[in-house]
Length: 584
Image 1 (tube, rainbow, N blue to C red):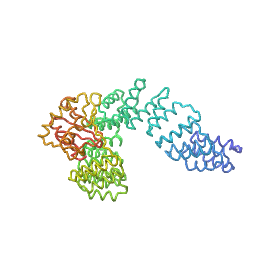
Image 2: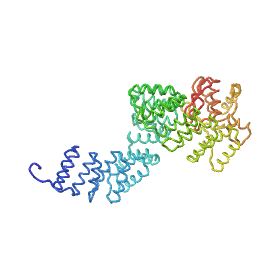
Image 3: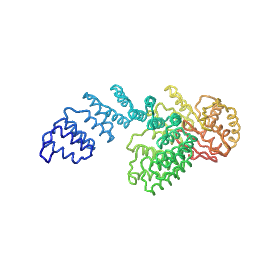
Image 4: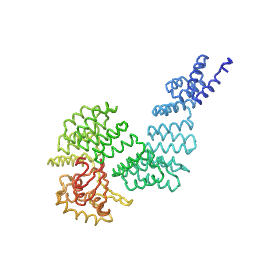
């Protein structure tokens, strides 16, 4: 047509632009754009709308936006093209703003618009905005097909709106693997591991065959629950189906075993991954650090570097934690100061918090405070928490008071700060300070979170709280504690009554300490597991100093490895010693 000298008009140009878009021929599209300008059709709204689609589909967001802004009357197609371009470029916030402009312009969105916006809300993890898009779907009368329903479940789950995710999931008549994957992953991601495992059993009963992504979510669920037995059972099913070679499932398995307290199983799983990514290495190095195997973690880091894998900021946090647990202050300083030069990773808040913790643990309190004052970030709760821990270890009342004051301002609802400061005062014999802390907690209505310990035996979870006698084997548990009392006394155990803040007699304090939830769980483990078998206990709070001391001695008296996972880390008690080196 062009070669015959027949001029294109406002109806021909949109068709040519559409052809260029469908064939991804952006070069020809730009040439046609030139022809549009020469022939005087650059202000025609039909031509401009088709050009917006071309430039947007080719990723030329600036040109697409410029043309879009020049259109006097925009069609839903041009809005959709620009929205989709923003979403594909992960510019989710801009997509939401553009959608709001679209509504203000009284252009009615269609199904493609709303589908694109669900993806934008998923990227933002914005369930509140996602609810509005869901409302438009209902208001405009669009049927909730499987594709849209799955997208909504995924969006709500990733935004932490699990009630909404389940409501949508429950109305899907024929749920496919994508739907199950989204809801299982959502529960796992939001710390609801038990619900994720229940849904997996329901999915199996429906005859849906899981894939590697489902198993990855299940391993993460087991990790959040520290459910070692369940992790092993899921691992067996993965082996049967041959998914262990999948890098996602393999990485999640390493993380799961590490967080369930079995670093040996984690390393075996790690060695079986054929092509280990930075995620694989980071999971293994982080696991070793969390279990107190600092030197082994650093050996693995060096092995990773030899294989040509570059660390990221997460890996380097684990490296600094490993140095912390191994007491390698010089190595930690070297890694911290050369992060940017050697690995092109700029130190972030987490790296500073780790380094401050390392200096504090080593007793270099002035150096730690100097780093706090010179770092390019405002000190957060992790930093002040590290300083409070250092103050407790080194009995520095001034630093403890300062760190606690800052922590209380940042996290006023957390009772742990008050308890640690009271312990610092108590260890220094400052009982007026202890009384003051008690009064502040009472006046501020800050309640100490009740300590709870639990352990899993034969797929059943047994839970304990201080002084609890409700367990079916309660008499045996207390009898075992009584049996241990004399060997513990002979081994040097003395109840640390000064760490108990209850306003009762010392004899009653000693009794309360001896019946802490950790000790009850360990006593149950001794009577409920075969001789020589490891005892795995989980704790919702930081393990107390008295329990830590007692369990170290029990590990030697009973010739057992006792693994306690508290809120911060793992403690491997063996032969009277702990992997944490008595610093946690």
